[in-house]
Image 1: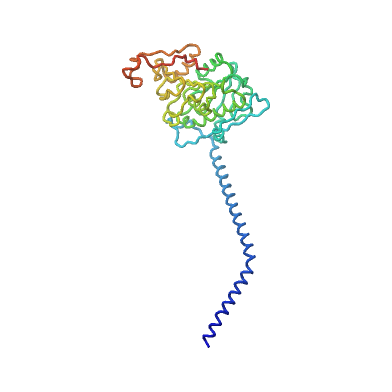
Image 2: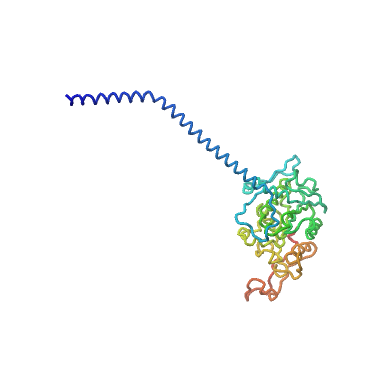
Length: 390
């Protein structure tokens, strides 16, 4: 009797439980569908909220970084160590297009690599506000301006876009208004070449320590690049544009010409390009300055202030004792280094022809010599310095 009761009780319980489960499943099925839809929607909302939160954090980070860079920095009291800090950021310039209906030429296209580097920078704006450009036309100062001032650069200068254009870039501890060689070169350019003459004055940063000046090389260079690009947008023709740079200014002119590229500038002449702070730089060692303009001429007069790599240009003139030092050198500023722009100015009136020098006068001062070396050495360029000048 007990066995029979157990065998009939178990199936009845199982059937009742199965019926309950089926009924519960049918009653919950519509609710599960709506619940799934709500869960999917919530997941999408959370994902969108996370994306928006990340964007807000990035914007806040950029604003904080820009605010930190906005404070002016005075580099003139830095020690003269002649080196550039490792990892220094390259602050690029922002080329602004001049507007107006009186354009004489359509703007030339900017290279894609250069266009990618044109981004706003409060630091760059600070440099553009302190570096001035002085324009001369007809032998007279016609305008002094900076890149942050409104209006076209050529407005009020008396210069026409289709004229010849020459730019002077001075060296360390110099300026555009009282340095003798700058004044003499400005007059020579007016007399022998004509057109428009300008001088880049960065003395706000070059009057202090040399190490601090080298540390801001990229910032000063970008201002020069912005200046030339702005002139091109105003119609100045690069194929009629010439640059002259001395010492640190020579490095600025050559670096900008190389970045413009494609040998667009007509010519660059340099005097004793600075060596300290540059000769140890890997990028400088690998740079071929013959790409900076259609013709690049470099004059060398000293081995202590000038570069130890004198063969990077189309014409490489080694004045005096093979560019190592000058017999006429005196105390600064007319030492072997400072005589270079003096020689250059004299070349507008006098010829400096390459002359052979007996080997016994320079033995021990040059590279190792062998017994089969030609009896005369040093100069092999038969041209006058001025043949490729302004």
